[in-house]
Image 1 (cartoon, rainbow, N blue to C red):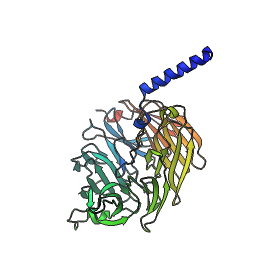
Image 2: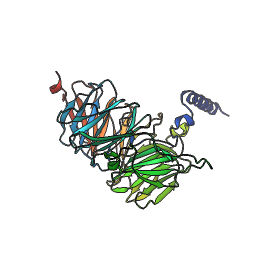
Image 3: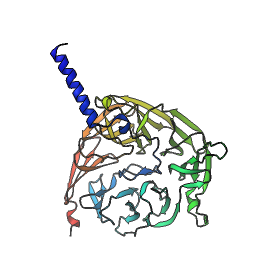
Image 4: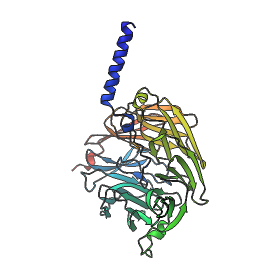
Length: 432
């Protein structure tokens, strides 16, 4: 063996040892515990919470961590519509907004409040025993469901001006047959809950089910038993850890359960499934069309060389579909699928990071880029860098970037044309 070959082997061995010392193994990198176990989407990453009935809109609300207030922007007109003070400004704030509504919902660790966009502030509506973990929102009917760390289920009905007209709170046990595992508000306005069954006393068998909550009946004054009212649907699916509504198909929900991804018709009760083999979840997403990104494995040494094999599971025209992608970017921060437009939008970093099941543009603030992939053949049609150390949101056809500047500084970028507009000093008129 010549000197150069020996040197190459030595260097490779040394680098391998260095990687082993610096990076966790594949088991610790993998976040997939086969369960999301939330209602709606998680709040911890401040992901976009969009109703299954909500159309894309150029209007956004965003919490500014520099001045600890909430901005309201119209990205179509490049107009700063308002700046709002918040209660408990020192805490993280998770915002819910339907663009056709006259209010936004502001959640922190211990309470929910509603801000009227005409500056008529509502008092905090609910204080929690637990910490709000996730939420589901139906902007058309004004339903908000909040799920907390003690598995409490809070249901609110909100009118067009942000006034709460009814509310209901329940524990995790639906009946003697099981406990809530996951859920979401479907397009038909019903709250779809997956129920983890209770083992039978005689056999130990566990029978899981779907519980279709009638929100109006549950909220009615006549419901004096404080129980969720609805229909129980038996199913052969087990450990249904993720439930998502399908936009445009009000009676369809997408479900992840043990070993498969399924599409259920809530009227016919029929289920169509695809096996997931031993693949693991990289990203759950309900923006804009529900989809799941799975990876063959989380092996660091393959990922660092770009050898990433993925499957994208989604629904199109009432049919469950999948596509496979190999050798592309390493790490997805945020996954946004628009089946109607034929776009898969990915915010990513091209380095190996600690994996996270949930969407967030802002898990990392350096080295990010935005990629648009044509769904039909997975052709990359747009790839653009995102500014470091800035808060990013996407709404409609715009990528919005908010910089850390007390005076106010932001850019909006038209994804189609790549034209950018800068907004400056929009905080000045509000400074005292």
